[in-house]
Image 1 (cartoon, one colour):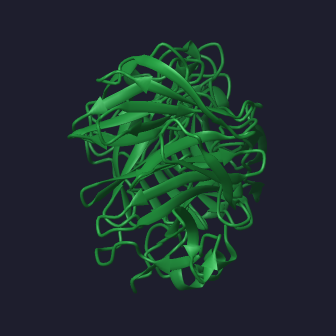
Image 2 (tube, rainbow, N blue to C red):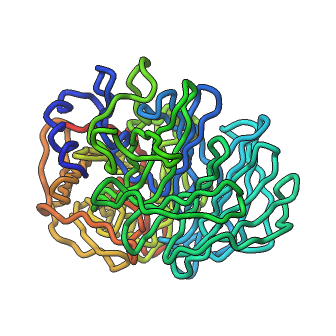
Length: 507
């Protein structure tokens, strides 16, 4: 997080809901979304912008957001209903955290949206739909293209640019007319350590943006012929703004940059940056302050209302809101929004511990500080059931309601690291309540959290003290810390919990 963004916290304290990037005076504060939206690809279709982002093993997968100004975003769709190819995606024989669906590339041509993605250890897929909301179908290619960068030239010819940081060779895969097959392969240039290619065309020039993960840097390569020769320069780093992204054109002319930055426990956030041009090179920042992403800048498209992706939910719909994702593919027989209208019913599911509890419902934690609060009806719990609310991530901290073999209820504050069994940090006296309110407060400035409970929704008791929030790409979930609602049983599940509401706030 930039120092400028921290300085703006006081100005934003009065805003309802999440971090508000739009300052209401024609400017915006970075980041536009203060949450884990990594590996961005952003396109413009007419006056609309669309943003696709990595979702790993969360289901439904591949989130797409929509904006009119690049600053104010709302959910548009998820592309993949369930992730296939490995039984671990169903939490069988262990979990698949950190796997699943990685960096995507989104394009639009002649009324059709196309999205390229390479599921881990599977061949690349080209999804397509006339409607950004789906339904999406796909072609599967005959090979794996790491972090594929889809490019459709002005003549309709399709290509995938691909490179892996362990190699550095950027390869251009030529596609057939409907993008269903690879018909050619061309090695176009080498730059040690690059990956995450994004290809754009401006005038007579082709530009390929790549990430340098080892240096947390962004490169830009250019050529007047798609097949090269290319010249490459390094343009940004996490110190100056980010290390993976590209540029998107504006309807009124000009371009804006988008770039990802590692930001601690909240995850990897996407930042926006003005672009100016010099000697046919895109230059990040402002002419008076080049080479860095500014903490505050003029909105690329003026006017319009401040908007934020949905977060709070009364569960009044029969369809799950787009803000929600399951921790793996859900067992759809074990949850319902219609069995008790106005409630999300989570039937307990067999699991040895929280990390392996399928049907855990999640949404992104948001910064700089955010609170999630749920109201649970406990009347349906059966002996052995454990339900509750807290965080899922590198650190899992939550309050669990336990139902013992005699039907008595008690509260435990539990904290665990990665897939280790959660250890009880603190326990409350047995409770007689039929419903309970649970709260998780996430502080992404200090990277710590607390959990609390209430028996009346007014008077709150903190349980277990502060616990750390962490992000680690080598373990955990490879995502920022998420809010999580769960219900499982280590032996023989038979009960359920009814979730009346989830309320999100930043104060």
